[in-house]
Image (cartoon, rainbow, N blue to C red):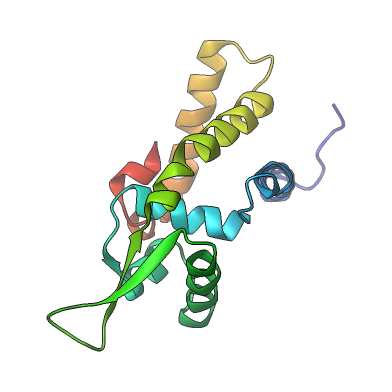
Length: 152
């Protein structure tokens, strides 16, 4: 393995880029882009949420989330409904087809995870996950990630 003269941040960026590339390649076969997968992942942890909450939970902005939801809706994976208490607010729900994508997309993500830690002993994997959780906490990621279940 080559030396890393650039430090933790650079190496972490490279790993993140490689993970995104692998997820993008594998999720294409399921007709879902990584940003769409991110929306679906959040909705699998509880749908019927306001668009504004979804935007915050996936660290996005209003314009981006609107386009993502448009494309997911066109694929029949989500649906929008006006909030009955506030007609200006919109809630996002999974469709049965959106729920059906959970198992294959989670399996794809598990395969990428397994590839990433191939050759690690169980205790090394546990230490790595603990260290990454600590890095995330140090950078305030848990406070802005939305659902508690996204941590695991």
